[in-house]
Length: 301
Image 1 (spheres, rainbow, N blue to C red):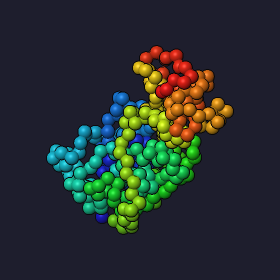
Image 2 (image 1 turned 45 degrees about the vertical axis):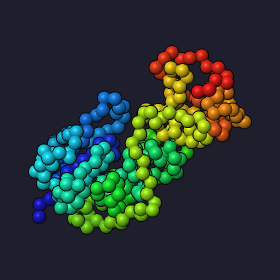
Image 3 (image 1 turned 120 degrees about the vertical axis):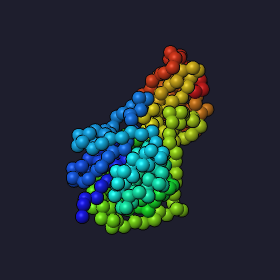
Image 4 (image 1 turned 90 degrees about the vertical axis):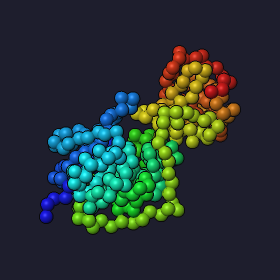
């Protein structure tokens, strides 16, 4: 019997690691469908196109695969199995139905929690102590298919989203290594997700980094670490100028015992701002859009 063929949809460093595993194993990857890098996005991660081109695997970057033309092109590849790893677009059911061995996705959360986009950022924002990677069957609804395998790691309350990503990244490769032979043999065991435990979050935009000073110090700190560099960052505004907040401290000598109206500047040097339940010291900041204004104690951001 001929070697099963795999059509790989993927992006990000998770896609790079999983595709690299398949190519190192000598699996038959007929093509990579991926994304062009967004010129407005900081590309701080490896992408699967690098791994594919090194091995001579064809690389395609359609804006959408859910067109008659691309459905025909994909059908012509005759994939036995589809694997999607951090591919950013929905893949239609007509394509998912093509491979005889099914279509499978690697998602960056411990499903059924954190279905949807940017799961690691959302998990950090919500102060989760544990995150993971889940391999599951692809169905019409995003991230809703039966689970084949998952693996998690503990993260710290001060880890940034990038640090959390680096810690959980090896889980994806290990999960795929454990299950790829079963997927290719059509013998993978599946467990339906518990719909009562589902949480879902949509994609994040730069504007979602706006700080709400009425929230608690912990909530604001979690937002900051969830979107700090290399992500677009948290911010507040003073007149026409935007203050990017790349890091802050909720428990420092400058914040202890300090209270005020949410958003009130309690100190300029160091810069301390009142929150809904205390204060944050803004330790790494950057002014944008206008010259840095002269901040004063009592000013509301």
